[in-house]
Image 1 (tube, rainbow, N blue to C red):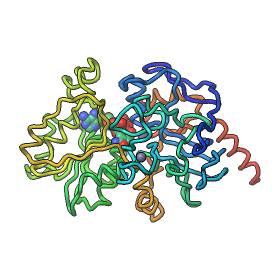
Image 2: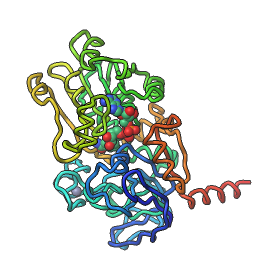
Image 3: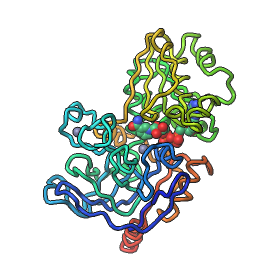
Image 4: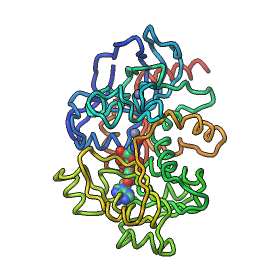
Length: 394
Ligand SMILES: NC(=O)c1ccc[n+]([C@@H]2O[C@H](COP(=O)([O-])OP(=O)(O)OC[C@H]3O[C@@H](n4cnc5c(N)ncnc54)[C@H](O)[C@@H]3O)[C@@H](O)[C@H]2O)c1
Ligand SMILES: [Zn+2]
Ligand SMILES: [Zn+2]
């Protein structure tokens, strides 16, 4: 099959690899019809995630058609259209029983913090991902959701990560009616966090980034105010100025370990790797929120340590919440929001790229070229199926 193949930092390509096979009776093989590139993939692509092995296939956001099922699979059948959450999870361990699917205890033998994630290095279980024609889906009765007939595949693929993560970011912010919410990051996750903040009752939403086309997009898409941090001296001071000098009620970090905006953080965190990435956005979130406020973190950081102003968080009496999203928990509610027309996720898709051109797709997304917000990769087999279907219609 054709699959994205990681060759080293900043080097990926489309290659032929052996088709995945059923390795356990609970597995399914899914024929991918669409996959996305995520901001999290950029951390891998930039060589920042330990134990990212040459030859692996990334991709934790994919939808497709069930091609084959193992003998123990009862809930899926060949031909089902499914979306597969980015978490690999067992559904029955202590953590899964608490719906903390992102922290499953049975799917990542390499760590005791995060559970398994498709295509996310051997620190997240070493599973091959969905930027490919086929992918092996373990515990296939637990993770995948069969798509309702009226759910568009472009919406479905955004339900595998970006939308539920943005939604969980807003949820963890514990927003009260009328609250002012500041979202750091206008990537897909920040855009959906801003949109979700309104669903949780925010009275005012402000999004911060330095990429103008993304700020333009989120201003329209999420009807929010925007701040370009390059045009601001002191970020915390600026947010206070915008909020009667008290600070925001809720701040969301939807940036994570590659944040720009502070040379010392970038040098020590990204280039010298003396901390687990640059914690600039988190720093700003803690300092921009009001006393007693909430900080919600979904931007990803590495496992070691970061320079964050924890003393300010303590003295201000903040509540900090954070996690990998537990995608499956949010799906019923989010599908309802989509069907009711309250949110139209597919609008954020700016690029549709054949899987063969995956190297260009990574470069464009990573370098923020061509007004790129979200890229969908389409494998050749999916394009052939569509061509046959449209011929049949004529
Ligand atoms: N917790 C989870 O479950 C989960 C799931 C998906 C993604 N993520 C993480 O969320 C983060 C965002 O993902 P994405 O797909 O939107 O990525 P992205 O790279 O497309 O977006 C990040 C945005 O942050 C902006 N930015 C950089 N420095 C900033 C700063 N100091 N202040 C404000 N904005 C800044 C960038 O310009 C960019 O637009 C990543 O760290 C990703 O790994 C977490
Ligand atoms: Zn993702
Ligand atoms: Zn589990």
